Image (tube, rainbow, N blue to C red; front, side, top):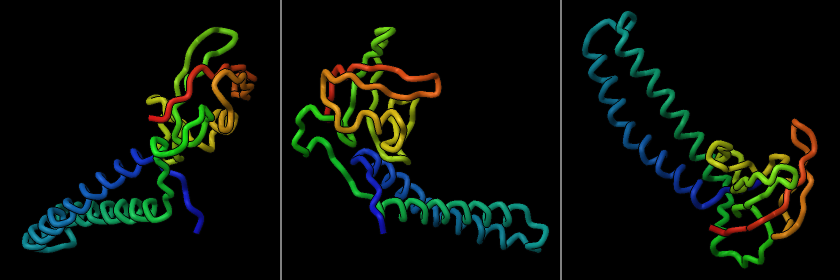
Length: 157
């Protein structure tokens, strides 16, 4: 089984969600039991809704447990940080043409959220950045064409 990189923050968020879902299980079971007492199950909307909710909850639990089982947790704060861009590091880039600054953290596929500044390690931008150092110029192919960025700062937070 191939391990999938995940940040310590990503693991913590998954564990919180798993804990929430596990606490929800008894409530769903109680809702099913109460709906069952209402009578004929074929026409019992409350029963069917509770069963559907149970199915969704169980699927989410299995999904999170699988993700955690194949995760390789990488905590960049505990690594020898030399200014090189690695998984989990946060990078400040300056667009050479526009002088616009962008800041990204390189995270696992499931943690990626471009609006929050977290990009997937498998994205073209991250692949172009991995291994570069502060001060390097990086050419990245984007949907809008090639862009040249200068690596302004690399943080390990």
